[in-house]
Image 1 (cartoon, rainbow, N blue to C red):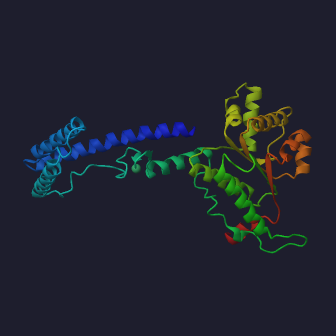
Image 2: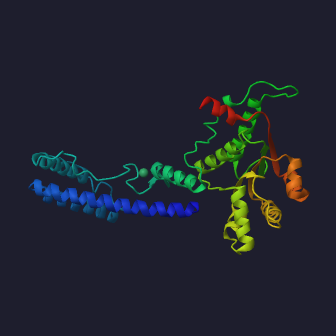
Image 3: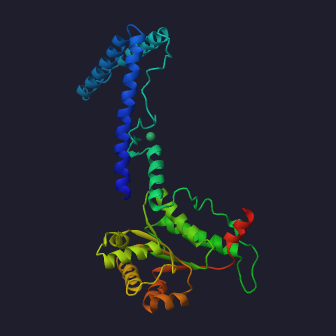
Amino acid sequence: MTREQIVLALQQEYAARREENMRIYEQRRSEACEKCPGLAQVLDARHAAVLQGVRTSLLNRFKKPGENAELPNAMAVMNQRIAELLEAGGLPKNALEPVYTCPVCKDEGYVYDPSRRMCACMRQELNRRMLTELGLADNGHTFEAFDESLFSDQVAEGEVLSQRQRALLARKTCLAYADSFPDTATPNLLLSGKSGLGKTYLLHAIAHRLVERDIMPVYTSAYHLLEVARQAYFENNSEKLSEMMNAPILLIDDLGTEPMLQNITIEQLFNLINERQLRRRHTVISTNLTMAEFKDRYTERIASRLLDESSWRRLVFTGSDVRKKLKRSNP
Ligand SMILES: [Zn+2]
């Protein structure tokens, strides 16, 4: 699902929620009216007064102000009377307050302050669903939760920075990239290095941050990408592939772990990277291959695309596997 499809689904759910809450209110109202004699008349009178008030203010928009001056007073009197009748019938005096799941937006999903924007309740649910769609909900791989203490602060022989300092620099670069998209310093990022050095984590963190910014990236493992390419090639089903081709930002995880299929892997990958680059779309790739291995596997043609420093920023991850450390600390 695209972001727009998720929003549409949410708007429909909110409409159903408003209807359901209205039904609950009507039920409460008829129960209360049975228990509290005289209540129905006051409720009807209040309803009529509200409608009249709306009508008058619409008609008198350009006339003298203060036409409705009596209305708040009359409403207060009727509200007071309603509370008394409810209490007399043995019900709490707020028993007939409107039923809203979210009192902030009254289940509209949007607030106006003064311009229309999404209420926090819908925004949160939209983010959750976007992450679910990406397969990244609940993994907690955010920039905020990035744990630098997992990386060694010892400076290895021949190095200038510790693994921790390098990890923090990589985090900073990825965060700046996600925060400044689409005006990033380079259109593309390549995170390379062995497994367990934080590449995938940072790729996920970029996705989380984009979603927070209301941008839905396309996220795929290289394995899935190959499957999509295979379908496009053998089954003439290129819908998913063109989605990946056209996505304003595409995140490819773990390039180099997918199986190599004759004629497909290299050609399709080249086309994808090349086309996206020509169309100035943003791509982030994580790979466990060194550039030499990359050339061996995918040919010089693809490697030279990724080595072009004007459009690719390359972050090289080195050091010791932090997942082993994680396992030791959480046996
Ligand atoms: Zn709300």
